[in-house]
Amino acid sequence: MAKSYIKFEVSGEVVSKTYEALQMAKQSGSVRKGANEVTKSVERGMASFVVIATDVEPEEVVMHIPSLCEQKRIAFTYVPSKIELGKSIGLSVPCAAIAVENQGNAAQAIRDLTGRITGTSASPHKAEKPEKTEKPEKPEAAPKHEKKAEGANKEKEEKK
Image 1 (cartoon, rainbow, N blue to C red):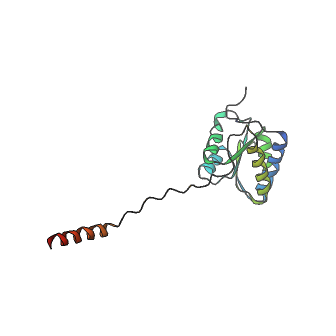
Image 2 (cartoon, rainbow, N blue to C red):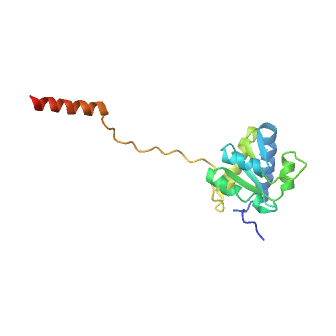
Image 3 (cartoon, one colour):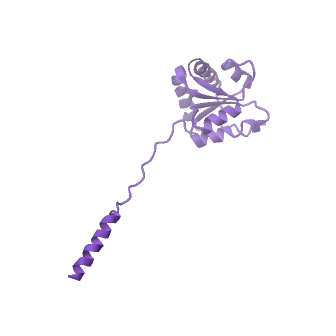
């Protein structure tokens, strides 16, 4: 049965490039490993790329991460094996998820990956953060002290 948190399929080529990018990021940048650390990194807006294993049991451990990434507009992808995911960053134990915080030398590789991932129609998330829209300008009101002065002038004129 398919896991409920998997939102799109990933090709074998993308998976192998993901492992390579993670190795580079681990050597020259910084990564956070484990579902709890990834969640904190995404919530704080520090993650730039997230990788989630698809063979995690129980799936509730990582099922919130894709939605959180979409909400924060952080690119993410899947790999089929938590064992291989752990090995890709030098761990001897399985790893459910990894967040890349500082890309280091892997910046170009991650950019290529996010381009491939977001280029597919199956991927609903966006890798780039949206541009900030400017708020419409409000008409300027006259300062309060000027209004009082105008009222005082009218009163003086009426007395004359």
